Image (cartoon, rainbow, N blue to C red; front, top):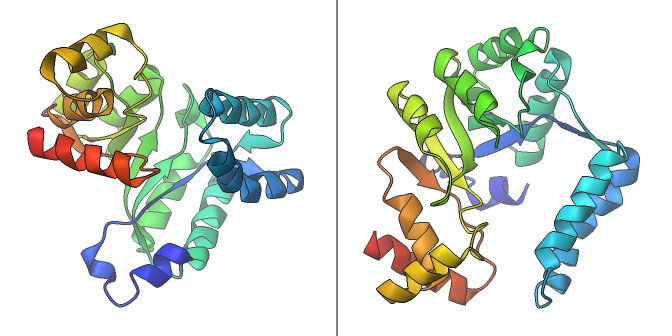
Length: 231
């Protein structure tokens, strides 16, 4: 509801995106609420990101968090999201962490068409790391965007197919490979920080429509702004 309150009265000036595809059990309610506080508390400690990721993985393995791309769930999830946001529609809806084979979910694309015709969502996309899942966006006219990670060591072949199909690419986890020696060496040679090198790499790719960055402090924000100016 914070986003809805913040842009109330000027909704048309913003692009609002959200994701669907996960079910949370009652037991995960506390975890979901506590995670932002836990991340903040662990931030100064080395390995904090890995610890948070292991907690998410354990929740998946214990079936506390499950994926659901059924038609009934998607329709209900969109309505619930709009109610929480206090909005009539969102601009983009991503299928969150879509696994390979997700497109076989019965009634999935019929449900997306229904949601779009109702005016509740303008465009659909998928958020995934697997190339097989990303490539499904190339052939399905409902899926107009893909959200995935991008770094210098990732193959460009999948992105070429996505670009040829006229789909937009939104990059996430742009800093996930910051420990690689090649990235550190490149940053040192060019007199920039590792964050600036990684963000600059993503921004310079012609197929990238937007880059999502996690900004946890002012120093990171300043680095991100400098990367945009250098790109």
